[in-house]
Image (cartoon, rainbow, N blue to C red; front, side):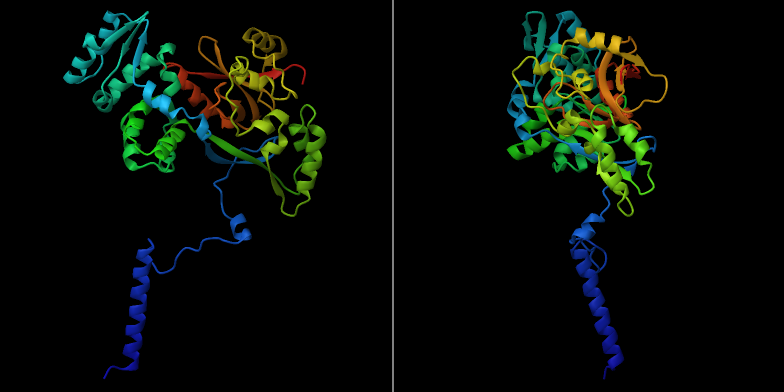
Length: 413
């Protein structure tokens, strides 16, 4: 006869075994499932990946990295799929194009296809080549990089408008969170190549041709045109120097509202956080994390990074700041280069080795700037860090060229 003690041990063992198996069924190696927060207080206590920025006159800031994608109606999916399969070599002769293909690392079949002049279409100073889908799919990274680097140097090729770039250290995370099938991600990885700290991808038309579901096409294009930015907030404590904070963040006409808000936050036991949106002037407050409406107005298409930077404190914006001659004169007459640390409202310019200014942003705090990286409607108004900004614009210069930052300060405020 089995004793009660043995029966008890058998029952306990059976219960543990069932519990252990149930744990595996829900994807965990034990019977205790992770509790999902449901109450408002529990949700409020969830971590959000915020990391502290360096403290300074701006106070204690923290940033949450996010990725922002344009609205679906801004995505030219059909046009990209149908019109992006040609290589347009403006300014090339048949001899110089042949020399490019001869010097490129190609298989014998690939070289035979590309050297077949019957596939070339000669149009008014340019040679148009339409490579086969098999060739695009099988190019080595070295060959892809050489051919697309040559096309990138030709504005008329259209490559720049369909080229996607990612920081190399963010590539895996971006696509892991994209929701795309592994096969698509593998194709993107295989068809990409390095450019300094960036990864370039130029074959969206080919990948779109392999996707049958329209919603997946949308998800794919959103992923490759999305931008990495930051949510930034100020943490005000009861012992924070409110006068110092108000002095830093008060510019133009915004000072009268900022100090009362900061004082109210300092009175909260344990302190409180406020989004950077509430500390900025009217224009950046209204536009941060948004996309401009597409426009047929030629003037709107000139509202580039310089226009945005020079209108940062203006309310309403100066619509005349689209003339590059006028903009250059303002930089020369109203601003001077800063040798000390930058402060809120300074202009941060990215400058090439030859002195050309290729971008202007507005310094916010630590190494964070407010920027719109082009007049294109798919470029959002956003916050970026210095190094990310430099890496972004290194896409527009040769791989071995070093860009530098220049800080300018307004003489009158």
